[in-house]
Length: 477
Image (cartoon, rainbow, N blue to C red; front, top):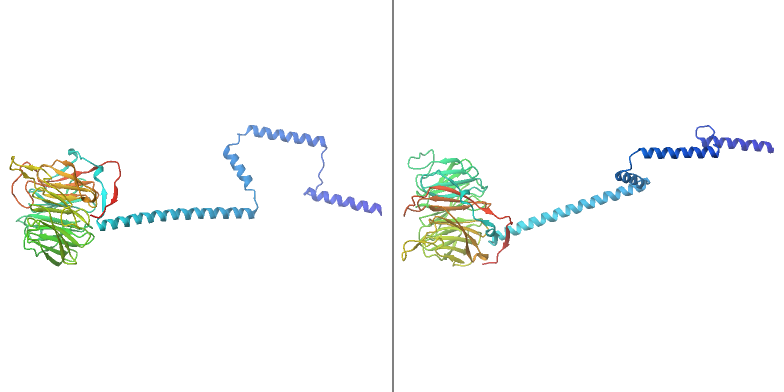
């Protein structure tokens, strides 16, 4: 019995040894000395391999460390990936929130600027960064035979339209200086060409650049397609020369002023007359408008500047100049600049009936001692919503002025030499250049001629210093 038990135990040991081998064979146990020699040989072989291979780079060590760190259970891996995903979501949400905040700030800034612009309290500080342009940089474009009387710049600043006493209209490319289109005029004009047959005195272009309007001494207003210079239709109704035209900003509503002392309102898109306004006691010499449903006019020798409120059918009357007020321009919705033949330039605010400031003999005077006469102010221009104003005369130069805070001061910046009557001035919408229409005679008459002058368009680049422009709200005037 004892011998059988011993045999069964021996069989169990043999089975367990076979199972531990994994291959069904018994593992032979090496002697201790032989096992140590095999371990020593293996370690030596490892040393030889590691010495022959390149040393571990930091990236390789880092990868090895990462592999060691990623030695984790499936549950730990799921948790780690979940945390990583949540972190990415959090970063995306933060970036999105930052973008939305920036967009809100930009929109708020734009809305604030729009509100200030509507209130007439936006004044871009540009004057301090302007530099005197080189005379060599002024481009002179010639194409009209007689004095230029008026001009406009397209909203994208790519084209200039000019008109003249020779009854012609020319469309110029600003970049190349080439004539793109010429609308002939004069006594020989046929009905098919639709050109003007009398001196063109006024011009306006809609804020979307679609319509061009021109007015002449023969009481007519012509409407053209600005892109093609194709004639669309004409407005009749004034009883004398059409001396001023302006499109209301953002619309196709057209205002016209005439020597018949009236203001008329038209709809250029619908070829329609709207209404007529009366009030001036002398010929109207200039007109301008912005986005509000109103316009401003200069009344020649009646000595008034008037603001016409179209919906209310009312007007505000302003007094200040001593001579004939020949030109006017809005600086923003609340302020304007005007010039007269007494040589004075005035800045106005709509809340006061007198000028906020006046510069007498702004362009100097001419004549012998004791008989001095001031140079007439023949044109004015303003860079919209800024502190820059330009004035033209016939004293061989255009003057640029800086408007002080609140438009209570007018300081001269520099003179740009030009020979002849500066009958029209316009700033580009970006403020990068100024265009002057030069003639040998005044646009409204022929009191005298400057023979050495050239009937031409002058494009004057306005250089700016590196410092950026700033915008400040103004205190109410």
